[in-house]
Length: 145
Image 1 (cartoon, rainbow, N blue to C red):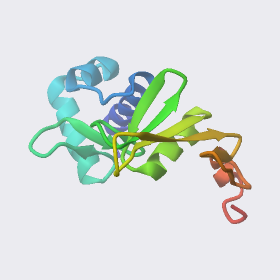
Image 2 (cartoon, one colour):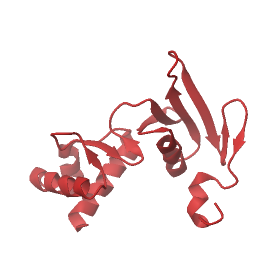
Image 3 (cartoon, rainbow, N blue to C red):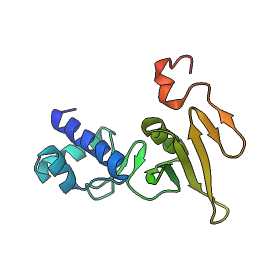
């Protein structure tokens, strides 16, 4: 990965964390002090190397794991901030990166939203599931985890 690619990738993630949405090319150009063409070339390389996913036929970021740039049925929420996730596991991953909160998903059966509270390695949807190791500490000793 080139230094330009690293800068664009870091700017993509920083934008997702701060705003909960995918950045535009103009935003990335401003954040990296690169011109639009250089940003597009970097995004293409990042997508070719499976570092992120672009919308078909465009250079718009739709996925930078675990973040989704499009509305999905899975979300992570901390306080009043929400991030779209590509799947349920990615919603848990967002919380492991950013802090305790809730994983939300739309019920496939009706219009309700299901929520799991996540705090200190405990997931509680009414009953409790407990992870012996909090997700944010998995790599401290991945063999034990």
